[in-house]
Length: 222
Image (cartoon, rainbow, N blue to C red; front, side):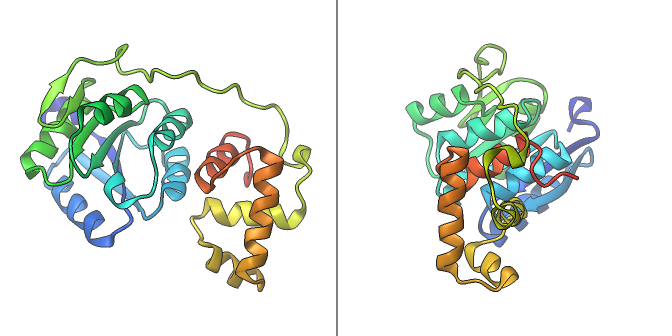
């Protein structure tokens, strides 16, 4: 890679270990790009983006259940992190929507390795990428959606119980409902009940939204 990618740090988010391994091995062929972490879930990726502040996030949407809202939430956490979304196939409308939601690059999963590296170079140089070519940036790479205003309340200002705060902490660590149940010696049904109450109190509808909300409001910070 050229000087525009010097000392850049990357985070890889994909559900399948083999996919993460393959992307890591490819990126590690570039001397000036350092892979600092891997995330097996979108919620854990959100936590790592906030904590590690990577220059680049490669997000394999082809192995995740998720959509444009996830890109928006990740961009909200750290706008300066450049996100490249790996999709199953390149569809013009979905590509445009992803770029408008904050992604800096969109590339099909079956693309040649050199195409992926070209995409990484282009995105880190400040331009946008779609499929196999550079595309005009949307408002110089800025997401085309309104950012929600932050709520100015402490974690305890939402009426959360101590156990609910504990559950939120495990979600930020990427734990599944089963993992949470084992950690606190409760059933998965009880975990789901806690999450339902948390979602209602914080006005969120998914684990990703919960992770984003928690990170942006200081939950889990001492």
